[in-house]
Length: 157
Image (cartoon, rainbow, N blue to C red; front, top):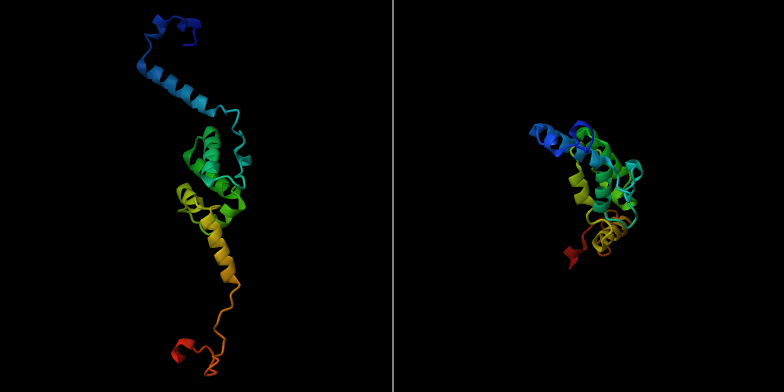
């Protein structure tokens, strides 16, 4: 097949069984997937989400790197889920923290949760939550008209 040895001639190669040719092509494709591209980090543990990088872009880089090195599908999913949380930026970690320990959580759910992180809407929600945290709860207030604690003002309208 490489033009050497007993298979140097195309006529000899043509006599090979189709299944052998398919198996050879499949093995070649699998080998090619494992060759890292120069622009992609080969150590998947060192792939981290940049502060302004979208979570989907980060996940794409992580999936590509892990898929090239890990063949077992179950091991691949465990590693991807763990690294997708641990190596995410701080905003995504905050968004993922409530669901990460749920065994039913998969990468699709993680992508869905982090898709709006970093947007103006997300920042507005964070600001609103922070402002609401510091608001006093009016359970121990006294009504200015009747002097009763917790009395609702609208009844005196």
